[in-house]
Length: 75
Length: 373
Image (cartoon, rainbow over all chains, first blue to last red):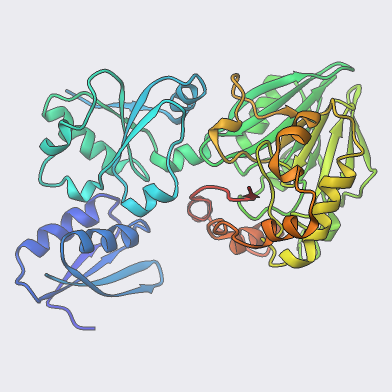
């Protein structure tokens, strides 16, 4: 999965992964894809819910060891 | 204005005293719908923190001015952020220290009563998750039943009471929470008992708990009564012919579910026999003390969860289904969702998995769901 930008949110606790994701997304264009890497387990449910409420599309998520990876397309 | 922390213990006290509270839960909607702080006098508002990042102005109108407001999230980080934002707008709130994780782990000791041959019985109410554990103390010795993994609470409590823990029992192999029984036994040199029929896959040493077994502590005694149905090994305990610990077989307002080891059809007959024959043969005066509660209505005014067996035979729907087929259908069909991570929790309780503390917390998130109503 390719991304236009990668956000490293590893080691950050809630709410920071979402706060940073939101900030990155603001600077991106509709249709672009942001890859987010996080280690906070709550990020999975929260990013899914956040993307839905913000009109973005969660394209994929993977687990790579301790790291959760998400690809979100800006709506 | 700085924001105040409220501890899980303080919230537990408010809930047990039925004090008014307003909870602003900033977790996502699914998490809130699945599991929240329950109480008879609590009002709720659920708005995910990520919908408040642009400002909290729209929430302020929805907050009451006449009751305390508690901001709650999963671990505390987001609730501090939201409470800070509200403070900037002049709204005073507190956040739940440690979030729902701390709520899930808080144990409130409640004295159930005295033992007739000398001694006391305590119930440890895990109010956020609905687990109930027990410590009976007599003559400087203690027996512990269905301890949760917050073992320090039990060890410290026994120490405060000047009691040496001699016997540690699990009524069955738990599927909804991680047992602290083995650790408590290791820390104190006590004997750890487990019903052998539940322990076939267990990889550590334990003392088999058979029906009819008796253990003495101080001037009191605990007897084991084999009562399968929730699991094939499920065992109840009778202390001094006064108290009946029913494990996950009988609750105050519901009965156990037979399906968490995947064998609902096989075990429903056992469950019926335990409830309708074995328990029927016992004295109505016994005080039933289950291993769980499901709803706050099951708590007595003092915060304990206890009721006489005779009253339950009159009031508990699950004990009053005469038709066997109807009973069978109730406990095998339309079952509620299974507890979070129940397979991994069973493996952990067998010693096959040894997850780190943080992982154990994650595995136990959510309600216990051991009952059918």
